[in-house]
Amino acid sequence: MERIVFFVIVFISFSFANVYEKNCISCHKTMPVSIDKYFYRYLLKYSSETAVKKAMIDYLKKPSKDSTVMPEAFILRFGIKKASKLSDKELKKAIDTYWEKYKVFGKLK
Figure 1 (cartoon, helix red, strand yellow):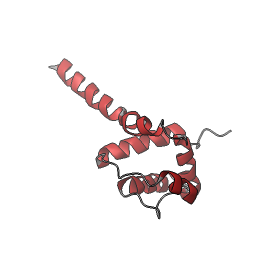
Figure 2 (cartoon, rainbow, N blue to C red):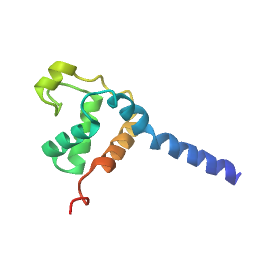
Figure 3 (cartoon, helix red, strand yellow):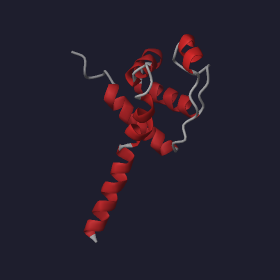
C-alpha cells in the first residue's frame, strides 16, 4: 500500500513539475524572441514577484494589446497569443517555475 501511495505522489508531482516545459517551452522555443526576454520586460514594468506573477496570469488568461508588455512592433509582427487553456493551478505552477528559473533576486553580486 505504501508503494502505491508513493508512486501516486511521485506521478502527481512529476506531472505538475513539467507543466512549464510541456506548455510554455514547447511553444516558445520556436519563437524568435527567447522566453527570458518576456520575463525581463515584466520585471521592468511590475518590479515585485507578486505583481509580475499577477500580470502574467492576467495576460495569459485574457491576452490583449492593452495588457501586453511587448512593444507594438512585436505585436504587429507576431500578433497577440491565444488565451491559455491551462487550469488556474497549472498556470500558477508554470508561472512559479518560470519565476524561479529567471528571477534575478539573490543572484546579483
